[in-house]
Image 1 (cartoon, helix red, strand yellow):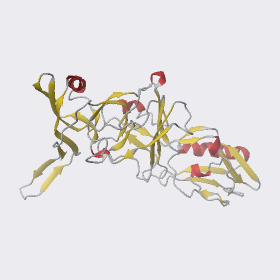
Image 2 (cartoon, rainbow, N blue to C red; image 1 turned 120 degrees about the vertical axis):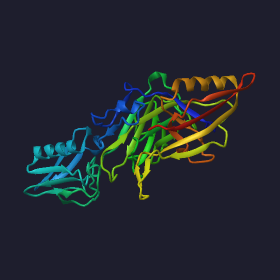
Image 3 (cartoon, rainbow, N blue to C red; image 1 turned 180 degrees about the vertical axis):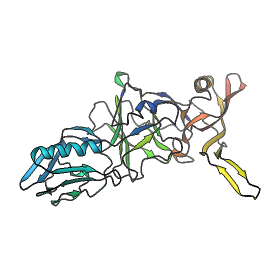
Image 4 (cartoon, rainbow, N blue to C red; image 1 turned 90 degrees about the vertical axis):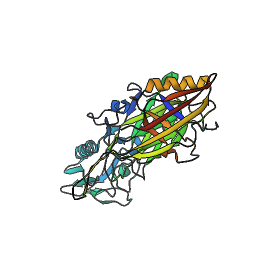
Length: 368
């Protein structure tokens, strides 16, 4: 096992492209390419994928005699899955209706006339849990027991034969939007050299907060061909859509010997326009708050580190956002507090001490 380095990190080598990625179902109006755009206001919308495999493709019912159907494997939206089940039931029986409520997010399997029993006790490769039927006793057809938003969402990346050693994964919500992932969700990053996710080589549980999702990956071997982000959030009260604005899977630049100094400032900026009426009443045009970190310094850098950071500052300028981590091992904070998607807040400066020794002074602010 490798000891995770404690030094500041600049994520500057995105390994995801539109040509090496596969995803669960996405709204065509909000494509995956938006997640690779720097601007946070461009979003990608996941619409709720119901993934049918052999293990969850069978539905059992009784219309006077026992019947069963097989759902074709593949990905479906909720409405597509309801239509597919209804079609298959009526191909072997009659008068079945299958619907999905966009207000309660529950499936209903029913029959307008005749015997209508759902054989929940028949569980071989059954679809019951996928649809939200959690009981084990046969019941008259009706509404599912639980809400189901999806099976899971995924983003799968194939790094090919030139797989790099990945050091960081990040996913950020759009501006003015709280991270759409609920607190009860399962959020993982899987890695493998085979495109088989039943037993991946690595499974990393990711941290999630209001800002986004994070994970440092360099505490173990992290050089794999295939990487897969998986989100399971089947009972999110907001239903089967998740909006994200930026994703990162790649390596980072850090320093060989130095780190950011203690003593930086951390400020939440409220850019709202505030005015007062003659009566003294306060009025505000509310704008989104953002985090700003200033007085960041790195002292006594050797020439190698200085050249790396100077090139990085030149590439990013003040116009290109990037991920930064000030405290990757949680020495003074939680990881999410000082791991942000940011712009440089002004032009970084390099001050010469002597010979080839420099210091760097800079600030950053949340990218909106």
